[in-house]
Image (cartoon, rainbow, N blue to C red; front, side, top):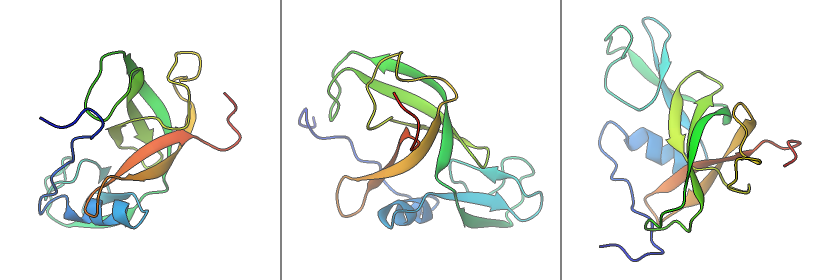
Length: 140
């Protein structure tokens, strides 16, 4: 069992290696299909829209909006309650699960559709997590 102040660390796979290499260098990376131009997340070896294997890795803008969230009041390894478990919709279209940083973890501060920017939290030499915070100029 992990210590209460240590977050569980994702385990990169060959399909996700490009994503974790990107986050380590401060870049959010997605995949785009060369056949139908669909941009998607999470990483996989084929396009979920047309099943083509003609995929390429592309940098994301790092901009998103808050799509949905729940505020957890239960302790979890690496998290001090309350904390938001969020789904953000990236500017490029895909949605991803993440956490919201630099913002009170309250319904008053966490507004659906609020603009967000990616930030990166280094866990160790291998894993840097993409988190999101309110975009500059968004006062809460």
